[in-house]
Image: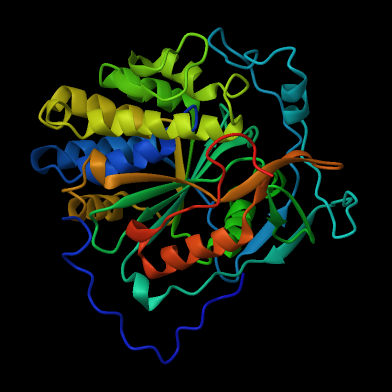
Length: 393
């Protein structure tokens, strides 16, 4: 997907005034929480110190001229604890397949024998139409310690904050979405990019799909998700599709219950697609509670939430807390109804002879999504292509 030529265009007219008449998914919640609460007057200094003491900074974001290293993470094991969810899918043959690295498939349809290598990063241009819109890549991993292993990127979300700072779009990319993997000369499931080269390779793989620059990267593990939920007294979640232990309707969940809710996929009608929708529903529940008056006017609960949201949080080296605070101040009117959820466009689920079960990307609709991200017009984006039931064609 090439860059869009914007040369010679007249400046876009102002749109102001017309827009508004888990394990790993915790990252999005954590970032949004920071954006809102760090700007809260009397608490700002204390909360900023808390955040600075919690977060870890790494070189996660590969932009123009940066060197990206392809070095497969073979999964150094980490100690388990009694609360580990590692055995949740024990004995499931589909889970056994998940444990290995997804192969890179060349144009000839054969697996590529990938060796350690490097390439130079490139970055899409920032369209003038987008104004001050920003894009955060949010990666959820099952790793308990990123210094030991990367873990699996079970959740990949692009968070788009619009120019007017009154709308947030969270775009979920199914981990099995079959896409070209940057620097490899082949394609694979999108979460293979993280396994083969960490967040920098994932950035370079995702950017060509959406054709907008990724400004910042955030990685979190499921412990933050559980702690955040409990810090605000649990949340009410709309269960759209029932599964064992989760009847359809609104259900109050604590952290442990929520973790089970968002991890399920085998009992759901669209597998990993349905799981992504559950994650979105849970994010909605947490954001509604976190941004409610009961939380924002309760200093103790607010401090506990910020502490939980930023513990086990790793961010790119350029993401400063002061910048997050300023962004948060500009987004002080954002509430739950201003947060919108999108699944990256797909046309079906297929069995690939080399890659296994894959989610097939809807190329034309991905271009449409890219156009809206570049123009900062996500409020008018619609996806009539992705299957609403079943597994497509």
